[in-house]
Picture 1 (cartoon, rainbow, N blue to C red):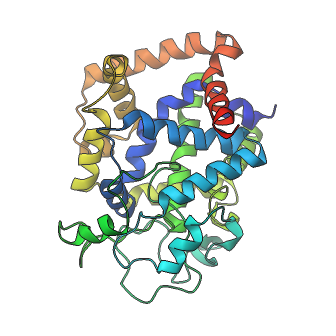
Picture 2: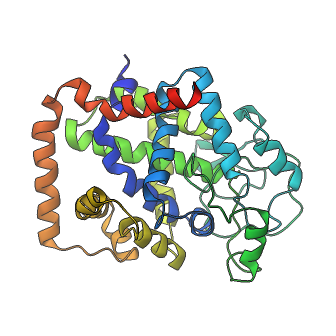
Picture 3: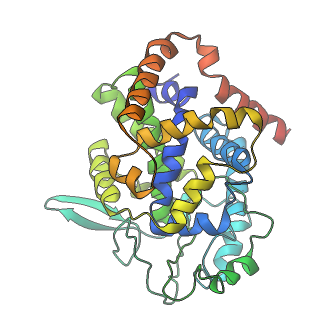
Length: 347
């Protein structure tokens, strides 16, 4: 076991899932794609299971298991794009099966500060997390290749090219609306970054801060969440210090749309859920809101006050006092169960 696998196997990291999703949809393009191709309200557990299975397969799966999960992800993401935002050949190539990250769009370095360079996600040189829709023009020869929905989420039964085209009529993706594409490398980078950053935030609240060498190692290996799909390796920031700069820049550009607020409401108040999930949802809402910045809580219109802050602090104080002393088998039980289900589904 490495430090990375020790960290990634901890079941408590799942507590950061709601935060990661809200951060993802606070990006305009990701939020638009999720709003039009996801069904949080009616399928909360399915969506959660698909995303968690992908993350565990990326970190712990065999090559065959990872290949199978990536193939499922590519097929699920095929219909997820705004009208005319992707050449038909691109969708067919991606949906047809496993696509290596080496086939992604070329990256070009751009300078973000004197003496500092980070790979650009597109040949146009646009900001990695621009919340402005790109101009509608002829698609590049090497099309984008990443996700605006969380990995592994299948579209609903009505999603497909016809459903995507219909978004023009309901104001979802016509002229002036935010363009989105599930194969956009910059947005897939953002999704992977939120999964890593949310996981490490929860881990360090429970176990304490990792030392510098371990933190760097864990960060480097978490790149697999993006590169297992189609994020070119050069898009993942080369060091943790570079990632922290990327993260600060990215968060400062987030704009929470009405679409994002609606999706967040569906996520945190699912209309169809088993009794046990309804029982734990108040805690899920508390943890999700507490892990966000005050600015994002206000933007998502999540209730917060001194009383909720005290409850949140007490909850994590109790978790950090008890959870690290639980048996390893219990702490790793979610990982083991999801991986067992994956193995059975491929048998």
